[in-house]
Length: 95
Image (cartoon, rainbow, N blue to C red; front, side):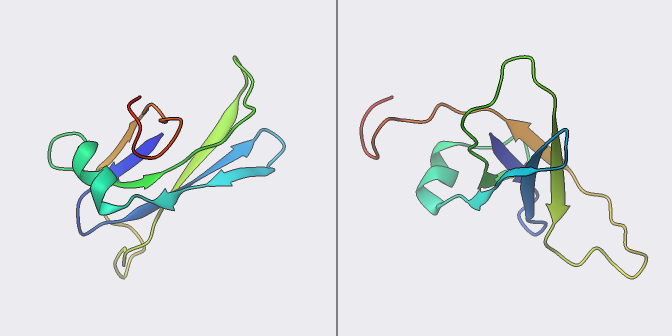
């Protein structure tokens, strides 16, 4: 999945199973991928989260964490986009 946010409000994502076991953490998208995978209007693709072996119908927890200063009160409104994407088998090959 791709996580998108405002350009100056980067985030990371973590996926947990229902027992609280961390299954995966997102990685920053490179500029090439960012250009090919635009986020929702006004947002840019920031991170990608790939986790294999998930069970259809399973329940998981997605945690999205800001990596920017959220302000003195610890809160700041933020727009987040979550979208799926198709993983190509080899870099540079058509999907």
